[in-house]
Image (cartoon, rainbow, N blue to C red; front, side, top):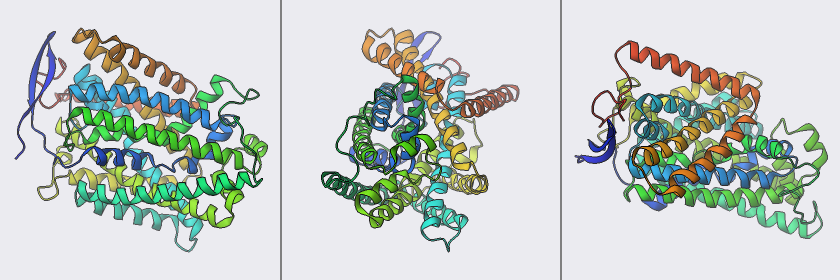
Length: 471
């Protein structure tokens, strides 16, 4: 039986504490959290979207990932501050709700819900399409159903089983990446592709900040998932500080791997000018670079590894994060109560996990039917995540600087302000269609919020006294 713990809150301008009872089983250490973050981000994630980032950035793909990593490090720093104050599952939803006000938390949760509900569907769809291309006899829908069924069963078995499977998958992805890097460098040393160049990091002929930040809005998809570590705050054995350290560690490792592999791939692209002019509608630019380096076997290895990484490893932990967000919002009566049920045997929110799987199938099959399904899902996911991150930075300043009168200007003002500024510029330069659809989703959230107030179910966070607005 879990014991009550205390968290700081603000009521009518006075700081006090409130109790909450952790309901999830604490079994994850620092290494588990870092592995979880790396698997969610997928060390070989750039392979699937390399061509889009390359063409969108004017060839400066390494610079794009570097800027993206810096932006996410600032965001991880804000997460680390808020998880120390509120060590609960729920991510931005909890931090904005408790750090600013409950209704702000609802809208932040609604924004990030767009990200978390759609991420598993996107991962399953990309993996299913890739595997169908490799084994055409099996249709896309069959691959998609298979991936979803496998992951749902694993996640229902408990978080330790998920951690074990993802660790094995991570090791496999790292082996494939190491093979590509070794073969790629050897190929360039033997005259294939271009000689070493700084152009993937900076090209004076194509550089503008608008171009780079526009490409960051695509590349950030590779980084999404580091924040999922915060969803495991109630299953973490090492305290709140461990969550923050795990986020930064996972981001640093993943960012370095992203930069190195895209730099080498950029120098191996068979037709750089054609890729810049025509883009990569089929998503095969990285595999073309691999074929240039080592032949068809390396291209196939990278393609299959990407499919398995996205369809099993990445989507497995995406389902974990989504289910924890649904659980947290249901616990606070902002989603149906059946989603807060925790399995006595496995200690996981089984209903939330199952619903995530069902939604993934429905959304994935619909998007597979659309010709623009993958592009539409990607743009919506990025908008939802970046919007939630903007609110997170505001929550740090409001909770620490305004409420608690903190004198730590670096951590509680300058760091979140820098993160906010970078992400705001990324959102401004993002795809216009994504902006429009994202604001429609936020508008729906406002309508739902008004409906909750009208029904007498105004947002109220668990462990908070009163209406929750004082939080």
